[in-house]
Every structure is written in C-alpha cells, then in structure tokens.
Length: 304
Image (cartoon, rainbow, N blue to C red):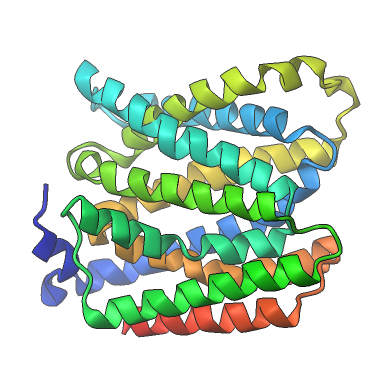
C-alpha cells in the first residue's frame, strides 16, 4: 500500500503526462455517470427500482467477467476474490440499494448534486483509516462542497412539489458513506490487481446482495411488457455506467488515489441538471443553482 504522503502529494514531474490522459478519461466517466441519473430515473418509472437494479448489475458482472477472462491473464487468489466480494457487497451492494431507492424518491438533479459531496466522505474515511491526508486548501474546498449539498437538500425539501423527500435524501447520504468506505478499502487491490478483475469481483459481491433483496420485484415484474426504450435504459445503466464508467474509475484510483478521483464526481452536477431538464422536464431551482455553484467552487479550489 502506498503511504499517505504519496497519496496526498504524488510526484508531479513523474505523473504529469499520465495525469492528463487519466483526467480526460475521468471527465468521460463523469459524463457517463451524469447521464445515468436521468436514464435510471426514466427506467425506474416503469420497472420497480430493485428489479431494475438487479438486472443491470448482473448484466454488468457478466460483461466484466467476460472481459477479464478474454483480456487479462491474471487470476486473482481465492483470498483476494473473497475480500473483493465482501468489499463489493458494501460498495456495489448497499450503495446501489441506497442509490436506486433514493433516486426513486428524489429528482435526478437533486441526487446528482448530493452525490457530488462524496469526496468529503472519502477524505474523512481515508483520514480515519490513516491512508489519506488532505491539506488546509483541500478541506476548504470540501467544506464548500458540503455547504452546496446542504443547500440542495434543504432547499429541495422545503420547496419540492413532492419529487424530493427527506427519506430519499437520507438514503443518498447513507449511500455516499458506504461508497467512501468502499473507495478507501478497495485501493490496495487496485494497486496490485487489474482494474477489470477488481471491478468484476467487487461488482459480483454487490450483485449477490441486490439480487437477493430484489427477488420479490424480479418475480412480480412483467418483463414481457417492458418496452424497448426501457431495456435500452437498463443496458446503459449496466454496461455504460457500471462497466465503462467503473473501469475508468478503477484506473484513476490506481493512478492518482481515491480522493482526487472522487473529485471528478463534482463535474457531474451541471451535466446531470441539464440532461434532467431536457429529458425529464426537471426545471433547476434557485437552491440547486446555489448548491451547484458552491460545489463547483469547492472542486476548483481543491484541484488547484
């Protein structure tokens, strides 16, 4: 495992060119995930959230295992596989449950803005476990991000037409905490195992969890009545968000650390708000605008 100092202050001369390509990929990842909020919101209007989640995650696991088998000659040890399954049950199981149920009780733009605060939770967990260190400038940026999240939550609930709920917000915050622990705990495995295998086995752990709790919804859903566009949404949420997006994420964590990678999640709000406005008719509120401004300012402070 890399020391906390190396995670906090990587050698700029050695990583500058690598950081450029990694940053470009992480921007693409942020766009993929930003669009997924509206896509998943659209899909769960027809398919029950737990059934939608189970199908897309199992689909993604099959794809990742196939990619790993064809492209990687690495075969993780049984001990590593069991550890990845356990960590994945938290980061890809409990988190995904909180995400999809929170999304079903909130506007897509609200969820995107709230999850932009995940770097703060990652930094707190990393510091608690003594694997990350954030300087004063970083903490000030994270503070602005949290202020922005608070503006979105309280503003949305106070002025909501019923699309945003306190339970939905609570589930998203709980999911962010789960993801923070996952992001820190998975770091040692990304340093010595391929991203494909880390992604496949950790997502498999999540698939076991979401499938188990989603069985009632899976059984009662009339899958023959599901339309083509809804199936397309499921495929995008599975292959796009969980395969392409997560492979980029694991690559980024192995190169620049979980806290810096998580900062890119803050690029999602403006894209997510715009897509939700166009696709779902979710007109951005003043509170969302203020929250987005605070979050983006915090990102810029942290990245400079």
